[in-house]
Amino acid sequence: MTYAIRTQMLSKSFAGVKAVNNIDLEVQAGSIYGYIGANGSGKTTTIRMLLGLIKAGSGTIQILDKEIPQSFHLVAPYLGVVPGEIRLYEELTGRETLDYFQGFLKSKATLREKLLADFKLNGKDLNKKVRYFSQGMKQKLLLIQAMQHNPDLLILDEPSERLDPLIQQTLYSYIADFQSRGKTIFFSSHNLAEVEKVCDYIGILKDGRLLVQDKISVLKKRLPRMVKIKFSENINPKDFESDKIMIEGFNNGTLILKVDGPMGTLLNLLKKYNVTDLDIPESSLESFFMGYYRAGENNAQ
Image 1 (cartoon, rainbow, N blue to C red):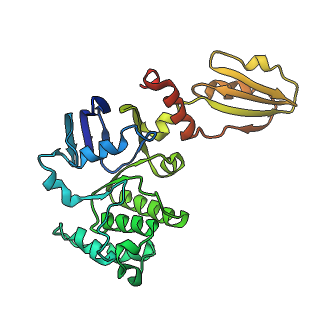
Image 2 (image 1 turned 90 degrees about the vertical axis):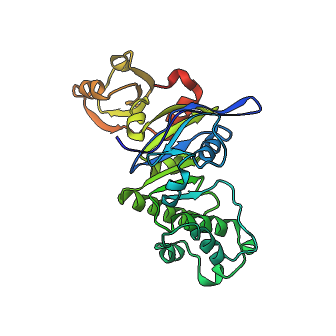
Image 3 (image 1 turned 180 degrees about the vertical axis):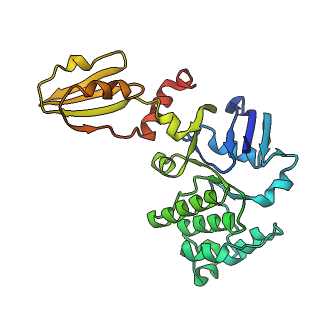
């Protein structure tokens, strides 16, 4: 298995408090990995260590099969980065800002013009000094500088912050396009709906500890499912109760169950009844996330 990012026992402390505590990140090449956690959980600290902006307290980091920070200069040309905080040279124009970032690389900004058009920054905007940009415009400028050279790995810290909904959709389209071309996207977010929509892998961070990481589709299967069943005949709700199936409600022929584990047992049981409607909504990432946050490490596998 090939990893775009891999850490082992990565830790960092500030004033004796561990902001990141022995995390083993495994970000598969070609994946979209959502790194989620509450504010202060250690997401940004992790990213800053990946990028060599702060020194790791202990542990190892590999990016694109190179040891970091020793070989960061070898991988930097293949990275696109959007920081969580906007810090730009306010006296440069938008175009000068893009040229400045591109100037560190030997490659060309092959995607710049398309990005400018899709993210709605025109020539007039680019001729303005950055200090006249709105927060949303600055965020778009950061995204464009990160993607303009067509990097192999995008590392994004809250990339959709300050973007309006239409531009958010543009960002998601670009992320999907990058993945379709074999590239990797690693981004932190507290927007669970965004992560569920965009990512195929997630890692959940709490108090500096990585509680779980896996495919979203695999993790969500661990959640109990709420099932609503409408019958056209009289039933005894107790017939459905077991150690894996709990009754949540029964009214006017409609039974609501909480099913922990595979649905096969319940579906086989329902073959004996006249069912007029069956609703099994998909487990939400929010439910999964909150379940892990409440249970903490005892729930991690």
